[in-house]
Amino acid sequence: MKSLYILIFITVASFQVSAQKAEKVKWHTIDEALKLNAAAPRKIMIDVYTDWCGWCRKMDAETFDNPVIAKYINANFYPVKFDAESSAPVKFGDHTFMNQGSGGARKSTHQFATALGVNGYPSVAYINGDLKVIGVVSGFYTPDKIEPLLHFIVEEKYQSINLEEYEKTFVGELNRKK
Image (cartoon, rainbow, N blue to C red; front, side, top):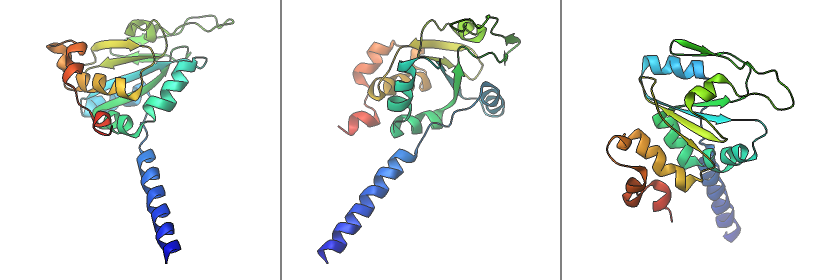
């Protein structure tokens, strides 16, 4: 009987862990996000990365794969992954952006990344439902550091207060679990 309780406990515990890990960010292309936004306006979050960027991979694995962060992003943004060295043209608003680089030893930066204001990787650009850039945040962010930023953007607190002031009173889901 004791072994049955242990088996049930292990089964329930592993189900809870897999359920928590099941939430992943549902990344879109820029075109998909723009179509979704046209039907139901929402903020767009663009993760601007490069293939060679180790901090970009770390942010994917530790921050965007966090189930709390992934769930919040999926519920409140149209998340986009954008390779800043991509050669594919990007149509955004009335402009078509290209990567006009020669593709030498290091690939050149796509015009779209430059137009967003990206100057390092990883960077995350936040765009409102009217396709205006709210801002770009560069550097690696842990889940507990990006959570208040995401709420700050979604709640449009950037219109009335700075992020540092907002963070002083912010209590997120990750903070409650400690």
